[in-house]
Image (cartoon, rainbow, N blue to C red; front, top):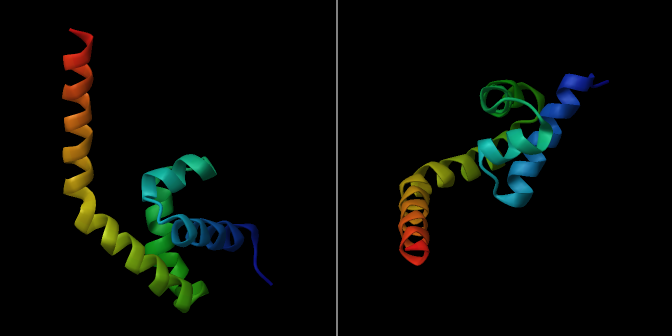
Length: 86
């Protein structure tokens, strides 16, 4: 039988896999801290569901590789918005 914490961890992990979500996005949806989600899906999930853990790990690894691209896009949009306001 799973307790409430285990169910939350599984729901977080499923959300990340289904939506290719970042830790930050997942934390916002579930109303918990980014560090909580990180601990849940990188440490605790491994003991609950190994297969789901591997799927989450793939998504998080991809997010880590693309992080610098997202930051660049964000900065580009910021400066384009500033140009249009002037």
